Length: 544
Image (cartoon, rainbow, N blue to C red; front, side, top):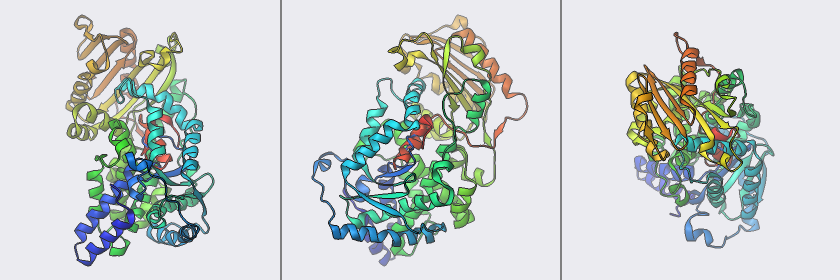
């Protein structure tokens, strides 16, 4: 459980000396996976605050959040060790620059922090950031979809996860690499390789501005809804780029004594992706809902896979400077790098004027893309991983809108019963559309009490239910699926007609600009801390 980076590198070297490079890369893959599971700067649908924080835990050997080990007193670095660590920054920067092709940062400011200082930093940014504010709103929508259980408290769980495991970070606002006074200097050097990659990225494009879609507030018109949908996944995709590039450098640094790199040892990246679903090495993450686990790991595993694909096919310059200059705009492109390299447009559906139908009774609450990553997580949760992977590949666009009842009391506004939700999606085949609707519909008894189907009210290809939170309507029309929850039947049918009409009869509109997904807040937010936004929260929160 307390495997350190230094030990991993020693094992890699010894295996390489025995010409067993397959075993060497397997060992490196294990260590990188441990790192990804404990790095707060990745953030699942996240909490991005312009900083890159690493929740390293087992990877750096400090086990800051692992049961009894967390209670052990810290062994603080000596002055000599601190000097050695600070001096190593420039040499590690040289490796990072050569490995990535990005210009080195001439002088990186560095600071040593105590554990309590890191905790205060995380808590302060969590409470103040715009991403966190959107996360708090999005939590109800996530629960309405069934991605989180109704009684799950997202904020305290995420704070516990972050504060237990954070180990170091680059802050793109202050341009400072923050190091830890309780972790051995040798164990922090691979972390430095990852974090200094962010410093080079920051110098190249300015991460604060580059990673933001510029959206603030809540859209209140059809025009604003469609503008938001067009850029809804930007931050999630760019988070995967920055973390994916940093993971490439991290892997190469871990393999440096073997003379190999990720480009000529691609099995390392493959092993990481294959193992990315294993959260057992992190006690907190093992207890997390699937949504948080997947969002946490997405920027690392899928980001690494995306970058590796570009690296192998087009080379270093294209994978680093090229992707920063022409970044992907959606999780569809991250999960399908060949589509990105072939410049395949991103599927984006249009929003009708839902306000004309709903605004008399509902306040606009949230609107966005239900993207390929969201679909994968939702179907995996409801129908298993094999089906989740298969149906995600059949996704061809999806959008959602949530409104909150104006009549809801202050207390009621914290519950899913106060929210009306509509979701419209398109699939690559009628079979895929029908399969998704079946899987989604089978979960209604888990989400609602008092569920009763009203066959007498149903039209062709439509199911109507009464629930404790209002009407639920499920409908399939060719390759499209419509879901309405908590909204009256007459209004739901008007909305369904509106969605079908604005898509038109011609080819589906394609987004040429970045979009933002339902779980964006988580992915980006966790990544903003250095781990999850591991990507969880940002897609729903909207920050970096």
